[in-house]
Length: 328
Image (cartoon, rainbow, N blue to C red):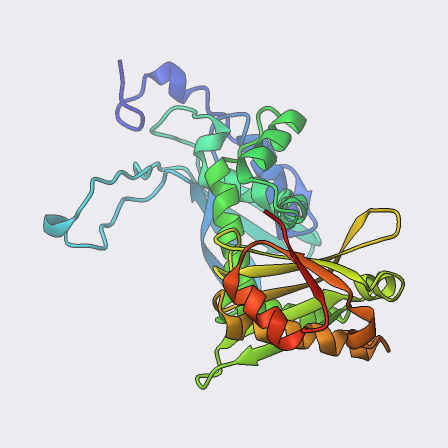
């Protein structure tokens, strides 16, 4: 029995084959990709830890095994709350990439071929997981934007390649990074407002408080407005809450066609389910009708809601000419 990184048997150390020094790569990215493709099935990985520049251009990249170096604690060990571990075991493997102008590319020189540990599965090497995430980044982003769960994205990747060196945690971390980029220091509802502005296919109105915080956001897609003139008479309103990332009640306003099919008319994020908040949404709805030459007094016929007292009071105050039916 042996502990990884501490006195591995010689037969395991011999399984780690060094890469060839013969090829000349046209770019550093291609060189690293080829090295990762070689090291991954052999149970180890390379990382760059230092570069050397000449006239602001990188001419050397110093490489080592991803288990090279020694662990340096950055906290007071006497006050550490939980136990930690490090993969760094001082592996002596050492290599350098150098750019040769005469060859017009990059060449590898291995300084030390020794390892002090045995091979390990590719999924245990962080550098290989990062490379795999970078390769599949675009498709992961597309699926994440559709709302697909990280576990299902991981399952689909496994169906394509059973040995892909990616963990579900890597996808979760990537999604969190995307979220931080999307917010750009704003609250989620503010970021949504800016997205609607940039998209250009949405009609929207919003309300802010004294601190310039968005307290309500009414929006409708232009395709919805194309259906509304021929189906303006019947509306259904319902509010959902605790079901979205914005942590605000979302009012759904739905219309019905003459064929009995339903379509979305508009949405409104509200600060709270109060008469005042509902009043803002109904005023925006009236304004939207008028913007497409529909008179609310003649086009609003009936509305169905649940037994929400605040919404009922707001309808009486802002749409008194409508027949109000309760869905029980």
